[in-house]
Length: 242
Image 1 (cartoon, rainbow, N blue to C red):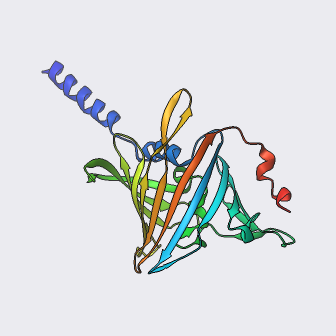
Image 2: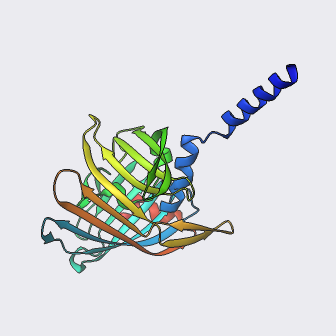
């Protein structure tokens, strides 16, 4: 009887240890969107639509390391040279003609439905507390469902419900909420890019579609020319922006 009891205790303990950890799932999923890498450079093309009106497309070059990133507008030409710098939880914007950078919020809209924080490298594991809910299928893909709560007011969103593929450990879709629980936007993610890191091939985001929850408006972000590379710390120096 004691031997059987010991086996049962061991089995239960093993099951508890094998249970997925919400923070680990979130941290691992961040890699596919630029988080936790030694340095990464990618290009984003944004196209926003509001009803039947299409906004002018934009092209942005992003460089990121951990909690720091800088995004520089390449097109349209009249905005060329405009930059958004993020260092930890602080963000600034500058453009040709401004005497000094202006502090901005990651929550401010940059283009259409895309907020300033959406174009930076993802660090959900650093910005949100995560709780693991039930597993659900998204397009026949079993997913962990994570409920994320912002750790601070500089997070891009107050609350996020995030579906992470069990097999690929990448975010499949998200719902973004206000602090009161009002649904603001939804997003879907595609991973047609691949990067190499630590001898492994890692899927990387290729497309993000953000839709307003109340009106017929959406922004499509296409990610291309993705490279893992070291980036000089001077790239994220606020003084260099001046």
